[in-house]
Length: 444
Image 1 (cartoon, rainbow, N blue to C red):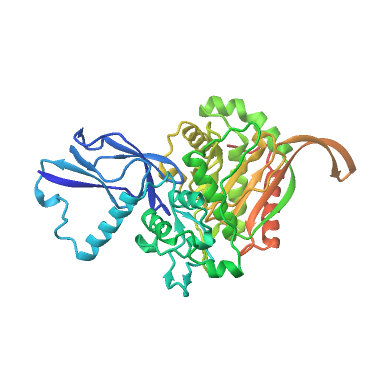
Image 2 (image 1 turned 90 degrees about the vertical axis):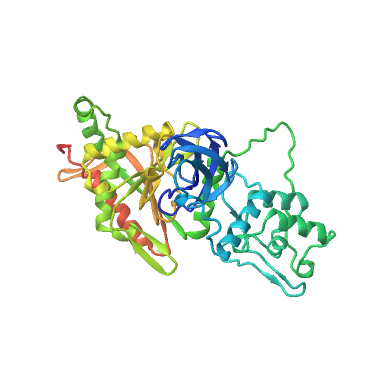
């Protein structure tokens, strides 16, 4: 017999951990190779993890709703193979064993919620040291459970930052917080500081009248954190432009029936806009970048994310890879495929990774326009408003006339740390020209 470690698989660029949603197999149950063992969730998409061998589930090391790092052992499977593949605990260096024990202690003492650690302070605010009390602070990252206990006990964020953390990388655990509460005797750890610089306490919310309290689901919590992190990181500016989409509307109306018959797929406006954006990005490559400290990372691949509403009301952003290499047929099929799989919760982690620019169609819900929040780590996002018929002035060689045209508002939010107003406006104007100059005789 041998014990084989089932590890949390790599789930895509930038994903370092995942939440265990549900164990499909329990200890003592038989599992076949490639059979699904558990359901997991990241901040991008839900997925399933298959077994790497055939055998019997001996032990699961992470409970449901706990967060497991990529590469961590999440279960042990007993097989009939040789002992060469067994779990080599005795061969581990002492440092590795200590790290494993620390991790296990954190798991035992803290029931994490369905999202990763929540930063209680901005990235610019490091963990503090209270010299008068000789207390070293923690790393500033707190789980939802720790935050909940702190709120119930009336512990201010400034107090929380001064409590020593004994978890991995100085993280504050439930055990640390309860020990602090037991010894503080009602006196905040940094009371001397509070006397000169009062810190607001966290008070429980109070309600009056008829109300309904709705708990955020896991995805909504992740979206909320992702959006707030973006606002804290980016220096966001939004520019607007009005665009005449009459040619595009007429072209789509002319080809849509034949397109559906020939390609067995509908053609919407989204792939047409993506085509225009991808061609414009080639002329303004800085829009297709990210920021790493004081370094700008220019992305050679143009991977367009399209914000997609889910039946639950949540949002997800599947990505069309190398959008500039696809013709309208390829873009249309990619858009329809990703949208359909998103609505049916069938996206894979790779489908939401490596985006370099995002497009969101707020017009599909009736909005004239919007000020979208940048999808980190990207530096720009474009919102498409609803298309409206309006009387406008048409300039011709024979003079100006008034005509009915299809008009739409485009908005571009961009990171002013590296994209100035001039570049942002030129890019936006470039997209406008691509749309307005749409060829009525364009082949797909």
